[in-house]
Length: 317
Image (cartoon, rainbow, N blue to C red; front, side, top):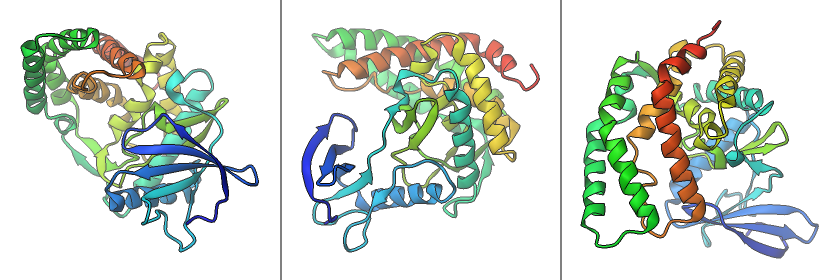
């Protein structure tokens, strides 16, 4: 299929929609293999978006084509990528990683602004999260917990967290209503810490692109810059987020200031309205439980400090 003489294949316990493997060939070269469960046309579109970003010097893992030139083998639904040395950003962004991440994110967004799938447009910030839908989802989740005769320790905590977040949805709605119209454009689609590979202070690769769909640029900035695992390291992230925005502006001068200044508010409201991973079926993995708790705590912390944070992140402050 790929012309690779595999001598070692090890499963990697990561990924939610694919089964992933590390492959070593006879020359000692390492590869990353992703086996899909379905939706191959969407996966091909995601791979093509990856290649589009790579043409603009965004650091990536390169896909290896099959012997017939396809990016996914049709007989066994699988793609093969170069193996990237480094670690994911799940340990948090600190120090000199802030400007590095800001530069790569700004470059990525500058490139994707020209993607033919969708031109950038302005839309009301209320489109970031359908709060009425969130209310129904939280109500259903709370009712589900209430009806169960026995709850795991995670489910007991998730129930309490759901009640707390449900009570805050009015504030989330007000936050979005007060924001100016924001830019919607093609994004990476899933730019969270597990999909950002770091090597020292440098960005080694942006991985796991989604198919090209429009979304709010402010949300993608907040998702990586205010990742819960980074926020929970302490207040260093606040100045770091400002450094990220400065590097983003330098790389993407055409970015609208409203999108950058609104990013934290957008991220906070979006997260408050999300039932993930509170609604995940039990048992959840220890890593997912840690993330759930960090995500909840970080969203509450940002909510309470939002006016102060937005003022501190204003250029010239």
